[in-house]
Image 1 (cartoon, rainbow, N blue to C red):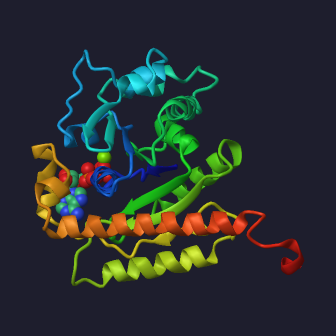
Image 2 (image 1 turned 180 degrees about the vertical axis):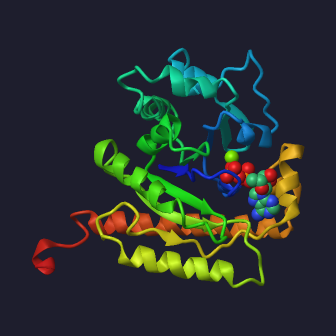
Amino acid sequence: MRIICVMNQKGGVGKTTSSVNLAAGLANAGRRVCLMDLDPQGHASLHFGVEAYDDTPTVYQVFSGTHTLAQVRQIVGKNLWLVPSNLDLAAAEMELVDSPDREVILRQAVKAMTAEQPFDYIVMDCPPSLGVLTVNALTAATEVFIPLQPHFFALQGLSKLFETTALVNRRLNRDLRVSGILLCLYETGTRLAADIADDLNTFLNRSDPNCPWADATIFKSRIRRNIKLAEAPSFGQSIFSYAANCPGAQDYGSLVEEVLQQEKEMEACDEADAPAAIPMSRAA
Ligand code: ADP
Ligand code: MG
């Protein structure tokens, strides 16, 4: 099971659009996927046409301890479940201040849910901050995807984001890795995106090999600016249902393929790590 935290403390960089369409694309590919909306703005929920009114249990109830994830998730498509959110979640940040377990609530909830019903992927759409909700997501995750909008200030703030990942890695989640950086809202025909990708590559190559982002890849798929991606949420649909042949669907389709390719590479790695794969006599 891969638990992917889609994070960037900046707003408007493509977190929600990427979480939603990645989750939908993986579900279309036959994976069992649970998308968790961890943003009080509830955009990922709205994207699937779920408007969580007062009587709808949301992830807020999971943070307050009255509901389990299994009790709040809804099925929103074939192979696809949504844990919705709404503005109530904004209160969680304050309410959790005095709770000693505040950083591990989501991890425990995910553990309980998946023990009962397994998923291939859990995708978590984070709010635009590095507060307790994002820390919960990082603590529960196995990996982090960072959507970036390639403009001049894109790399500014990235170090803070990496620091937070490193801190959670040290204190709460030894397995946490940044596995992918995704260029979103990409303008074709400009040098800027290519320059940013180069700068980022240089930065990653110079990083300490033990840090959580040492093996991060910049996805080859670039998500071009495409108006259909901005329209799809108002129809409560993923880009694959709303406009299956538009550039946005092609770009997210190719991201899904890369993510599935990573899955194969991880399996190959696991097999190589298995003691039976390399007899000690030959390894020596
Ligand atoms: P975040 O979750 O990081 O705040 P969103 O995914 O909500 O960012 O994107 C911000 C806005 O930009 C939304 O209105 C969304 O519909 C739009 N958007 C995101 N990606 C694209 C794209 N590739 N092309 C056009 N509009 C996009
Ligand atoms: Mg968002």
